[in-house]
Image 1 (cartoon, rainbow, N blue to C red):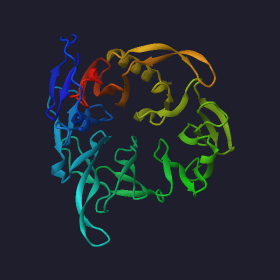
Image 2 (cartoon, rainbow, N blue to C red; image 1 turned 60 degrees about the vertical axis):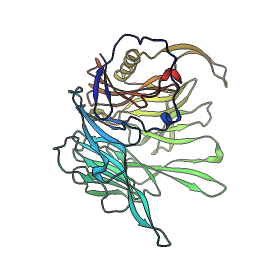
Image 3 (cartoon, rainbow, N blue to C red; image 1 turned 45 degrees about the vertical axis):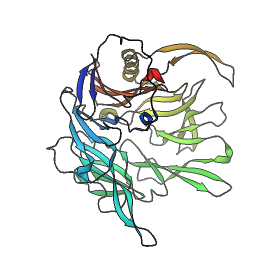
Image 4 (cartoon, helix red, strand yellow; image 1 turned 60 degrees about the horizontal axis):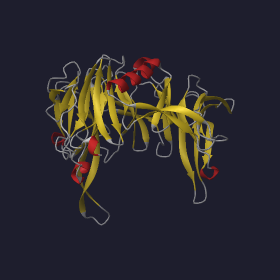
Length: 411
């Protein structure tokens, strides 16, 4: 059984399993239909799977945040208005703990430019709030620090109170209940830091060069007590991309994506202690390797569960059997048409039969620690995004359509 939630009032309707009756030609969408804000976006699930939040826009212009309880999907959600915060638009929402959400909104603030004239400037604010109206006071991140763009870098699921953010050229740990921030790493305006599964900055990369040569240089360390070691240097003129993409269980071994000496990109292991490349971690005989996929569950946070690769669209080769079965079952439930085609690699001439989806496909957007609740997106070139909640592996609820006025049959 499917259930549908529409707009800010979260009206729930049962969807009929019978096909629609009628032969009228679908109405092509107008320019205004494409210009509207999505009716639902930024869907996020609490780690315990008990609550869902999303940005909604009933009229395609104004934005709200709705919060649902997953065990009461027929009840009206809590609806939060940006105007009560002094803002103009919500631009982001994400659960950072079971009882805390990070909300980002834009507001207009007065200011002056070099000639002294006054103007209104767009400022971005990030606050931590409870999904429950009685859940305590909100806390602003980097309050009283001017116009600051905050990027969440790590949720630190094992830490009950803190997350890691990047702001003002630094990395900070932030208490999500008080907003108190402590510097974790300085000079992140020069370096782009990557964090390991424990939230520790163990890889940093920077772009260097002049008008004649541009390069990326990365350094890594086995622990915070170790000195930085060279990890890679890639120069644009070499025309063989090389980049850092992840960690392994060995603190000295990192994953790199490289085209060097290959028809297509693969993911390889590199040992910073031995200063050499080790085994190939993942490669595909027909397509470019993408990036490793790591678990967001608390029990195995940061563990490798798959690899992405670029086929007809981006696909994931799952190493985790639960996720492989989940994707397969979701395709069946949402009537994704998977067909086998004959594929010929243009560079090598290798022939193979591959699975390809017909137009729309599913992607796993978010999931609870026990996988009892999963947020799913169905979308494709002629399929505007639709968001679903899968509960207990059995019940599938339609949360909403991003562009309900657009009939996929008209595209």
